[in-house]
Image (cartoon, rainbow, N blue to C red):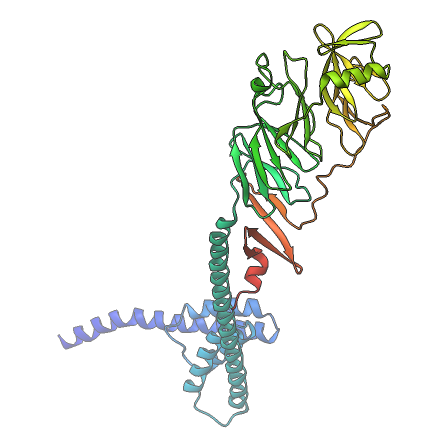
Length: 427
């Protein structure tokens, strides 16, 4: 019975012994190959074979394998793995006096230095990442802060027009017109007008571009505005102002209402209609000076034709009307008649000239009838530094350059532009 037990034990033990010896032998073959490749400087192939050898090992069996692993991983700059194998080498190597042992000590020091260098680099990278994260957070916060602050500098208007020397401009909002200064203060709130003309320091706002029924006048010098007397108070038959000429620097403005044989001549500076002289005495003088042939009531005969004398436009020039339409203009200084077929409309006289419209083209004409194409507009040139910038959402912001820096401005408030605001914020 005892003999049978021994035989069975040997049967079961023998296969495992054979297999164990076989794994050891196979791994040893791979280790030898790996060493040869290592000495031939074929490092990648050597590591590949070394890893195959490991598959046949339960652990690092000896200092020879540990040394090869340390050297291979060191050459491949896998320093933590190299250090592990180096430590196994020192645990497994019994002879501490060999040159090989001393060389491995030197290698271990090199490995540790590389690890220390790597750790230092990682710490530096982490510090850099933390600084960058902190800076990104700071920039995000400042961007949000500036954006929130800038909302107080937003103008919700549709458009802004040209500024004059008084730092005033017409603006539109929701189909209405108002007056604004160059820092966004509303000087005259928007009203129900959709067209305007401006000249010589005055703004006329019209409820309609053609044949307006309401006109609002604004004096840029005094910063005051008012509604002109209705055209019906001037002439009960008139329903609109007709053609509106430019306002002039002396306050004179002229319109040509319908159903009227007189122009609407009004002084927006004095808020009064043009004063008329004693008509009878005036006509008597014109007859005496042979400017007219005869007169009766408001009619005058010129070149054997009876015409109605209209209003005075300045510099002695009056309108003339036939039975139905405007006939022309009479210069009472020399008797010259300007034909309305060519001289369609004249504005008020100021600074030596009238505004003249001929077939829709604008000219300037002196009292002698001499025309030119240009005239000095006393609106003047804007001399401020404000720049109105339209945003993508249709709103506006006002930029001013102060001592080389751009600011958003609104009224008496100012906000440094975003880039410089962030640059100058404390870190």
